[in-house]
Image (cartoon, rainbow, N blue to C red; front, side, top):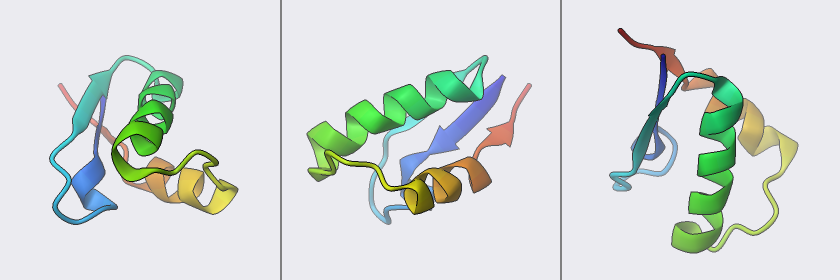
Length: 58
């Protein structure tokens, strides 16, 4: 399992996900970025940042 906490990238955001695949996390983050943060186009730099904060759990 893998975990990502949005607050690791956007201070104060409490959203987080635990998924079996990194691609699942990225899909959830993209939806969240649009709805919660108004980011409709996720640039490659942000994807890289998100990937660097995904950790293995359990």
